Amino acid sequence: MAKFEGYKDIYVFVEQKNGEIANVGYELISEARKLVASIPHMNFEVVGVLLGEGIADKAQDVIAHGADKVIVVDHPLLKGYSTQFYADALTQVIETYKPDSLLTGATVLGRDLAPRVAARLNAGLTADATKIEMDPEKEDEALLLVTRPTFGGNLFGTIICPDTRPQMATIRPNVFSMDAPDPTRKGEVVMFEPKFQSTQPQVVVKEVIEKVVEGVDITKADILVAAGRGAEDCLDLVKAVAEELGGELAVSRAVVDDGYAEKDIQVGQTGKTVRPSLYIACGISGACQHVAGMEKSDMIIAINRDPQAEIFSIANMGFVGDVKEVLPLLKEEIIKAKAN
Ligand SMILES: Cc1cc2nc3c(=O)[nH]c(=O)nc-3n(C[C@H](O)[C@H](O)[C@H](O)COP(=O)(O)OP(=O)(O)OC[C@H]3O[C@@H](n4cnc5c(N)ncnc54)[C@H](O)[C@@H]3O)c2cc1C
Image 1 (cartoon, rainbow, N blue to C red):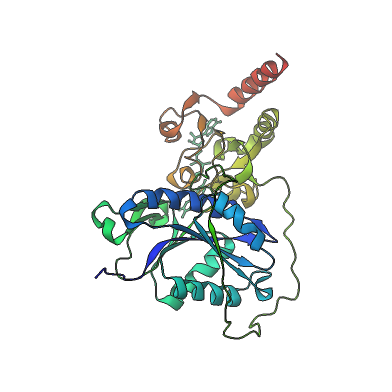
Image 2 (cartoon, rainbow, N blue to C red):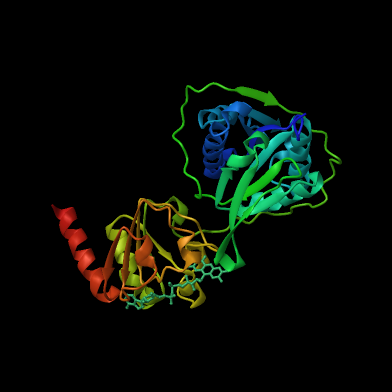
């Protein structure tokens, strides 16, 4: 008899807000597809779990992005996020269908929901994972090797949950890439009716004040020009280069700690994870906590006056020099190239 009789498939919690699905759900579905493909003999499927109110019509989008099946829990109590009702509903879905693993975005919502559900199920949860693989020696158990930064990001630890199911993990947005959707893809949609422990909310939200975000979300920018401590006294120049390229300004944590920029645009382990097509790192040393947030950029260009700076080891191209000398030249060349 198999060790975990009845447990099957990789489930992905597909987060939505006001009917808009967060990309991280699609990124996790794309990664889950690779994981199931690595254990074809297990016949695992990728299953999306969609919670909310009036969201059933989104199930086809989830299928188009790679899910074989979508479990929809459509209920008025799930209109907005509530730890109580979402945890109730997701726990019941898991108890009913017995997924072998469940992946959730390490978003504000996911970081609240996943540990609550894991505690109720007595399941193991690895938070803030950066890599997920099937253990090649335990393929018949579909054992996941889940890697995450540890000791302040100086080391990576690989965590396994060999004794409980589902194996749970939260993964930050932008860690995995998202496959292009296929609108013709077919899949099964299952409507699930939850039974809430109580319909009385334990917490009543009196007012929601939306955070006013100035500028754009750097996780969505295709080009980022990032300033580190070596460029914090010439942020206007870094920003001007970003604007010439049609990109956005980002910063290292040192710049935020020194009071030159807001945390909203910080890249790295305690900031945002980004994967633009171009990342220009200006006066950034390349500490592992920064690199963890940008190493998956398609093209990395580094400008640093120290030829030994760590950032050069991950850069596709580098300029050794003072940012205040290199950036004006770069800006001039960009303007010339645009004029031609
Ligand atoms: C738990 C934890 C979490 C962290 N999370 C993050 C995170 O999310 N993001 C993050 O960025 N960091 C994070 N850090 C901090 C990280 O360890 C580094 O301290 C930080 O990334 C350094 O920022 P920096 O490279 O801008 O500054 P520095 O390390 O001070 O490097 C400045 C660089 O600029 C170069 N330079 C100086 N002047 C010039 C000039 N005029 N022209 C060209 N080059 C110049 C220098 O040679 C140097 O390489 C974290 C640390 C810990 C412990």
